[in-house]
Length: 213
Image 1 (cartoon, rainbow, N blue to C red):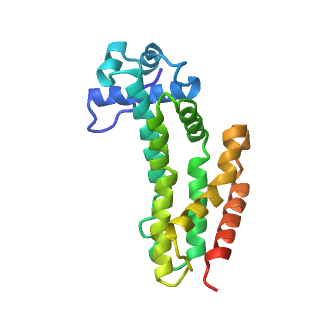
Image 2 (spheres, helix red, strand yellow):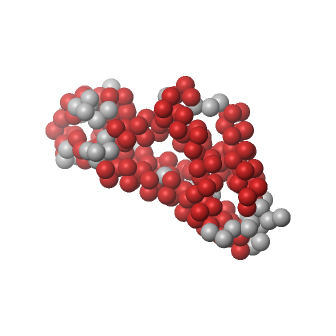
């Protein structure tokens, strides 16, 4: 059964809520939405079913909370340090570090399971696909566009439309690896050396188009 870790300053209700979320996350990712019951979540969280419903009005509400929370956390990790990216001078090194971090964060079994789960439930919960896009690709492209516009303004890149360039870079990095893992499963997750080579080639291709000559 899931056991909530003690966090200083956290009350009993907060611990129970966290235990429920941890248990439900594991079960939803393993069994999918239709295959998950509130009874199973309560048992794994070591709380009563009444407690689960006290924290979350329905299975749907709990599911949405988990999906949006995981999406937000992953997006925060990818976007770490992007705020001042365009103020740095070493464009190639910064892009490579960003690309590697993005791949490492996104190409984890749990996040790939999350993507498959959202796709499987797209008709039932269309808002979750929108949440994934806002917290993932759209957020990444928006952050990169700001950095690219700054680099272009400083004469480090030759870019007319920063958002188009940002979208191109994002999908140079993400397109093939994510697509393969989505279709082929965890066995297609690249090892670190392959990941780094792919990131480096994506950066090389991008700079071949946009670096000042």
